[in-house]
Image (cartoon, rainbow, N blue to C red; front, side, top):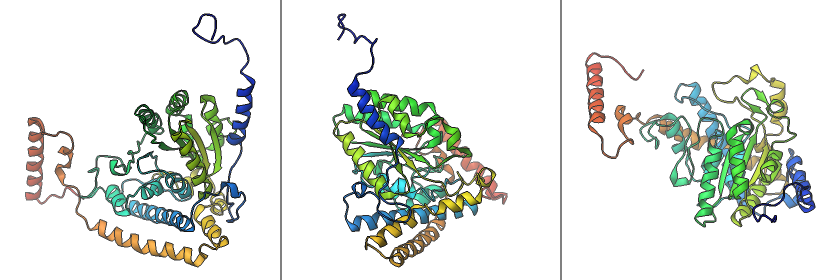
Length: 395
């Protein structure tokens, strides 16, 4: 303390031990960690998580399920059954690998491409489809914009505005710390979100108050049509955390083994009071940004073909075969099994009736006031008149 007893005198260099600490942190933020390369070869055994062969197969199965349901949501959107979809293809390892090591009481704040995390948390394909099709079993009753969340799974509904979930998740993590719980928040967002104010405000607060949070950047190289090199002049995205006192780690986001390991370590550090971690998972979006996007306008098909070699399911099949866990034929049979299962689920979901017309008046008031009752009655009378006139209001 200074002689005033208020603050340290600031007119001096940063202490040498802090400088050395940041040099070490820079290695993680500027480096590239991977356990398994794109051909399924183990390149760093220390980065392999200590999990059983059964758990490895389970992780692969979640990735397969995410790929299958993602493909169906894309088909259903093209059929006019789903309003909008943000394809997950190529990014399954990040969502599954990050969500798998969490505890049930931890909280997940997803973005657009975390179908794998939904499945890991216990959500079924049928629930995802009910939400996407906004049918009679839609748990959100059509009141959200194509993105799911549910308190039952400690999954917070993802916002449509980019990065809005970051400061909210930080507040939740601070609340857990305030309440004395060893619960962790896991927040997903894309590379584009690191250019938004919410990212900087959230990371700053997280660093100052050392909240128990893990931030995962899905760096898929494209923020819609803006390439990574136009997003920031920083050499990596992970390095941005250091400005806020948040350690950053750059990893291979298509290697589900290293994603699991690094997120698991970060979560345990947070539980012990060690503060937040920013993880940049380097991956690649093989599909469009959303079904409203045409990637051929800003990138080449040759680029996409090259990146197919790095996609996570292919890598996982090769890894399991090299480790004697599953043959490629056995791994592909899991895909066939889930293709069949999900097709049956899709048929069942499509047969469900739509939401009732008066759904607008539900989930707003515990006890409906007079003006809501009047509006609901007006709607019923209008629909009855249309029916008598032979007019369709669903087509």
